[in-house]
Amino acid sequence: MTEIAHGAVVVLPGEAIVSRWWRTLDKGVLGALVLLFAIGLLLGFAASVPLAERNGLPPFHYVYRQAVFGTLAFVVMIGTSMLSPQVIRRLGVLGFFAAAAALILLPVFGTDFGKGATRWYSLGFASVQPSEFLKPVFVIMSAWLMASASEPGGPPGRVLSFAILVVVIVFLALQPDFGQAMLTVVAWSSIYFVAGAPIVLLTAVMGCVALAGVIAYNNSEHFARRIDGFLSPDVDPRTQMGYAIDAIREGGFLGTGVNEGRVKWILPDAHTDFIIAVAAEEYGLLMVLFIVALFCFISARCLLRLCVERDLFIRLAGTGLTVLLASQAFINLGVAVRILPAKGMTLPFVSYGGSSLIAMGLLTGMLLCFTRTRPQSEIGDHLLSNGFR
Image (cartoon, rainbow, N blue to C red):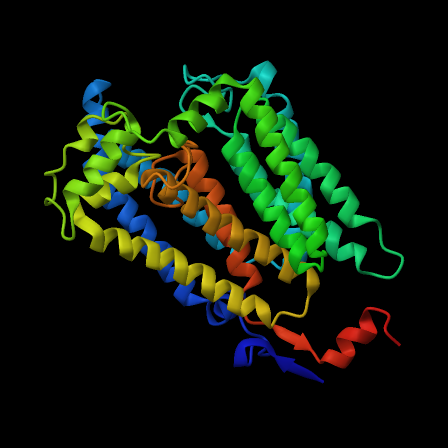
């Protein structure tokens, strides 16, 4: 006998795959993601035109590229959401090894594009940032290992996942990319917490992270410069942070008006890391609150649906992906209002960026798959299947 998760009958004999996918999909989350991308295109029309002019390109060059990458991202998202959790688990584990290899080889074949951090592979017509793709598949890998550890006779998944985490963090720090390293730690910690980790152990992990931060501060000029800038009581008005804060202040509640903002003509990263400053200046606090509300809605809805999921792997992986998405949005917004040090991180689906968009398409596709309504075994059947006889 079975019961149905989320209160809907989801198995109909002979039903077409697309029909079943659409009926079981969380349409609210899908709609929120579409809105985020639409807002990104709207802000792209404002923020990327000055950059195109400076680079001698057509005015809407970056907007067209954003639309192309966004279309690819949605194709990836929809295609991934149609897969079964088992297929995603297998592809995620294989994808992790591929992304990890790409990350390890960055010092040899990668480029920094003059930004002081070797994070990309240049393909001529575009660039690829391996760390963007590593994050979601790392979550899948960790969730699989920890779920396997709960099975009778299973491997020491928690220890293995922690060892993999350390290796990933080391190679991210070597770029250096401390922002992505921190995101990876946060995602892993959330999975470990849901898997039943003791608070004492999680506290120890956070202590190790703090110690690593101290070591990085003392040995990395790049990291130390950003921390010093964040801790300074005064903000240099000629820095990116200074311009962003002025733009947010100028926008007020309703904004200065469409195409009336000035920060996009000054900030080199107005279309990526500081896109929220453009939104705040031209559309005001209302637009910023709407964007924040969309991320909160996506995160809360996914977590609520995962709370009734009895498959441990799905629950762990879905939680890690949700925390990853929400944390990246929080970090980007926090940097713009100076409650966090600068980290060079995009706002999911809103900022310009090919690797970021497609990787987010992959992440949200997995999340949409894990939160689809599906038959759930009775709790007694679930316990029996896990060896509790």
